[in-house]
Amino acid sequence: MTAKRAKEIEDLRNGILSSEDVLVQKALTKVETKGDASLIPDLISLWSGSDEQKTKQRVESILFGLKNKQALQLLVDYIQTDAADEKKWLALNAIWQSGMDASEHLTALIDFAIANSYTNAIDVMTIIENSEFDITVEPLVDENLVRLNEYLLKHKSDNIDILLQIKSILIDKKIEG
Image (cartoon, rainbow, N blue to C red; front, top):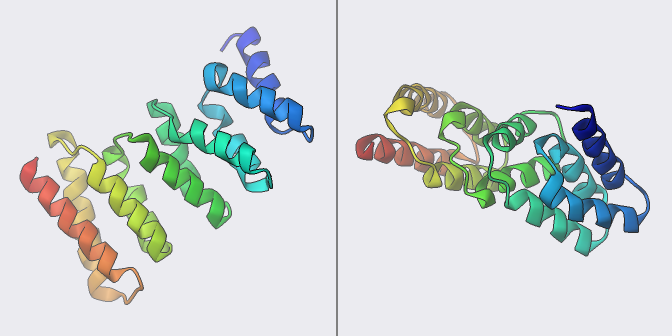
């Protein structure tokens, strides 16, 4: 990254984190065309900390329209942090709403579905259902089917119905593959 680009990203970050709404709105406008994936945690924090519906909707619009693999990786990494549940929910929904293929991140998604709420597990199920599984991820599917079977045999959870549905989807994807 050039010094000029680094300065541009830093200026956007400062605008996003500003306490002045005018600066925040200007930064959000610029983020749409000049931002990069490194701003995702700042956008999520802005969304979480804002009481302004307009700001929340603009952040959602930006996050739900992401299309690059670097953004996908950052979102998957984000749901694995100790961030607040509402922030993880937004990151998870950004993966889902963006329509990006998350099949390469199956293990992290399964872990998230197991460890989180029923609602979040439904979101993970939707992401998996909408992902494309080709021959290159078949070993990952196999590994996660084994993990899901082991988990389902050993644990009682509010998510069991959804986890069984995820298992069924993975089996279907494997057959279709």
